[in-house]
Image: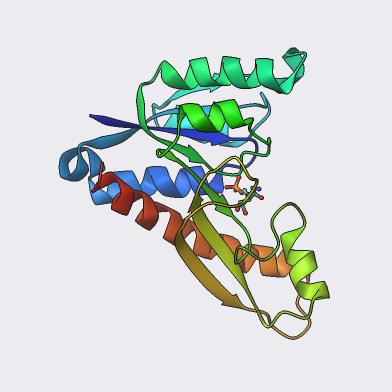
Length: 193
Ligand code: GAR
């Protein structure tokens, strides 16, 4: 069985979309794959309750309990490795990962970012897109490399910016597209590993 481990920090709506896609698409039978665990760096991440309700193993590795980024990443990597992942999926995981962590999961580590990369890496992507006068915004699924929000692009969704858009309104429309492209990109990856 190809295990998928998902890292979250908050609401976990992308994680939930992936779990629902697994259920509706019969990933266990069709792809020999399953979401084996959801791990959060925050104990109050709302997505943990959803994962538990689906019978998925959950773990919390609290970054505040570690003296350095390296120590946190080492503990996180050990927790992840406990589930022997074929694929490690960042889904609203709001911590910058060290090169050592990225190297350890090289080739099986993917992220979703709420912009049309390479535009707007980092935070506040929707406000920055509005401020720049972009006519289109969107989201990108990409392989993770040591450089933040870079790495080979696996999928993108384009969302028109509407007159009078706010960052929140744009974010909500982009998020609904994230829920479509992330499971699709994962299926493509699973077919090749
Ligand atoms: C999503 O929009 C995701 O693209 C973004 O956080 C949100 C998480 O929502 N990720 C990043 O900004 C990563 N730098 P979710 O917790 O409901 O999936």
